[in-house]
Length: 193
Image (cartoon, rainbow, N blue to C red):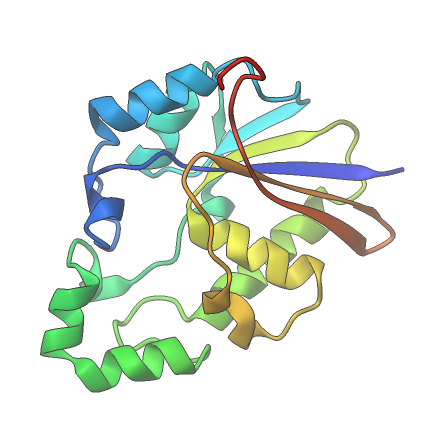
């Protein structure tokens, strides 16, 4: 049996524009409008999931999705950096940021390391493998990165080299522990231009 997992990256909001670590802010009117314009473009799914973050829940709602909360798909826990911008943290703690970006085992913020995040997402993908029907999940970009790293058996050091744009879809399909990846296509209606 082929397993299909369809990840949708959450809509743009002020926090993402500012390169701010998740602070619980809304996607705002602009992000919601973009998501609403993509409503109806997603494939049907047996399961629709969303992590507890405001951005993901609001994106799912704007896409017209009735999603169940899946805490395993929560974004990277950045501990005491939550709510701060990357520039703010980089100015205050340049060595810590450099270490964090270079070493997937590092967690100078007191939260979760990139390696731990990748392991958590890999565990979730292993659990969902073999389920009937498509799983659709509206998630933070780092969850998509971690899923692709696992699916393609990439080194965890590749994590930061994967760009995930807002309101794009990445599809994983596979069986017997082997995944194929269709990367980052935008959500848009065929007649949208």
